[in-house]
Length: 386
Image 1 (tube, rainbow, N blue to C red):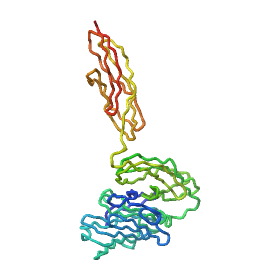
Image 2: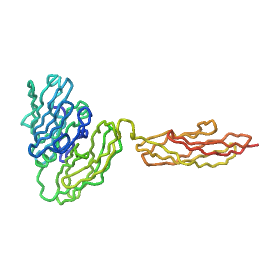
Image 3: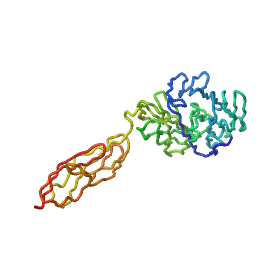
Image 4: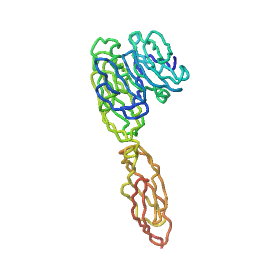
């Protein structure tokens, strides 16, 4: 079934992994462990990895076979994506082979959907099994890299479950190099902290310090029980460098979470701790604009311009913008306003003012700068004209 355009290139285009760490398809928590549970490497003795979710089980039996078992209603989806090498060049397919239930096959359906790499593209529909034959796209080998089983991920053209063996499978079919290829990972950056349910983006520099050109799988792994959420094959000449950008949609958890994320190649890795704020509203990422002490040109004569300055600092943990106001008088009246945008931890000096009225008598009154989060006031003196 042709759903997405086949992509073939010398440098691979990685899958946009959207596996929620320790999550099932409904976003509920699902513990991981080293004995073959969701998101961990499978036992050596059977070579299979099974992910339980929402009444469905997703199993990667090998590099070329995967299954999803459960109940599917009209509109549900089951699609496979692949990585491959063809005559030494890397390529991939994204959501190229699969079915939409109720359109391509009957719905509802209860049973097993079997994805297997064969010679042709075909769908076999049975009572309790649907067979989806995935073509051998590459002459050097083809790997089932992920399955997409959620409608939201299908619409985003992204993966729901990544094959935890995909990197090893791809290494087995990658072209042999004539020298030493060493990919060093450094300068890892993220867009954290973020709110639960937002996209966590991770960037890192990859440099080939070896003496031969080569291709390696660069992986993004997350969590204290590491789970691979995306892989990008990267091809570099000796001494060459590139920046990879990877990520995934974080699960909608209630509580704040801090966990490591790591970008790794075959021989190196770089790691950072990230924070995801829970949906319960406590500690969620937000901006907070503090207003520092005021400076003025007081005293001034009536009719002259009164200038007020203050440093405004974003002490929150998210970028934001505020309308910063200058208010004057015992019954505060706004006389000036500035729109201020700041990244977390940055500051700017705001200068505002107004022309004082031509009064007869001396007047002393408060002026203040307000950000909506904070305010600071100072008393000023204006000499009258009498």
